[in-house]
Image (cartoon, rainbow, N blue to C red; front, side, top):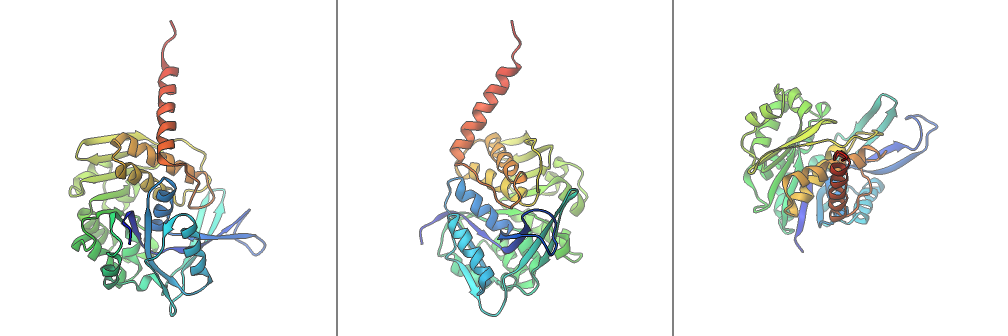
Amino acid sequence: MRPVDVLAIGETMVMVTPVDGRLDADSTYILRPGGAESNVAALLAQLGHSTAWASAVGRDPLGDIIVDTLRAHGVNVDLVRRDADRPTAVYFKDPTSSGTSVYYYRRGSAASAMTAAEVAGWAALPSRVTHISGITAALSEPSLDLTRHIVFERPLRPSVVSFDVNHRPGLWSGDAPDVLLELARRADVVFVGRDEAAGLWGTSDAESVRELLDGPPYLIVKDAAIEAVSFTPTGVHREPSTPVEVLDAVGAGDAFAAGWLSGFLDGRDEATRLRLGHYAASRVLMSPADLADLPPADEIVTLLTEGARTHVADRRPCH
């Protein structure tokens, strides 16, 4: 198989979203793929990168929706296993004026039965970056073994391992802090929310997260509407978040990861990587879906550069 920039690994469900209004008997709904890792793959494809997604879905119409939609987004789906015995997972979004509630139906899904033995087959598609998240580790014991195998044993070497902590409390028992900590410490690139880290490990700010996670060469701590802070071999970098009117926050973290990884793959400077992350996240925050239309990364960088120049010009004193 032709190498790809990013191989994303993890469960994708069918997301059921009301077009207008609440989750009730009279609403009209749309069905779309919803999964942290495949979101990253689809957004990176829009940004101009070659991506693939490895997972399992049921041999059912819901699985067809996921595979066909991601393929249409430009994601290579050759590594997706179709399971005749287990279903494709599904979840429902219930948007309200105070936020969006999400209801998951994923127990016993096809993806939860993925094992570490499947990774050997995925190695046939080389990648520069392997992206995985803490969600996969929480699905089942076999899924946890799979995640540990990828992060600890590096069967997809020399691919860089990108790990989004993505803590979902409803999927875990009491061992989430320890498991997610050991995975994050062993990855090459780590994405984590400041509040997420505080809830898991009792950290107070980005610097205390770095003290705890001193292993990864790249650590990106997202502080919601305030800023993102990255700790890299070139130092500490901070970029303020892009202010937007939030329609739905689901998927924004995946978009940020896609933007940052795009800059990483293209060898851009750290400030640009963070700005790409903020830009992608802002587009998803203003969308009712987990994905949003993004222009190629080069166009975004041009827009950001021109915007920065205009901002500086506007601040110059008149003489």
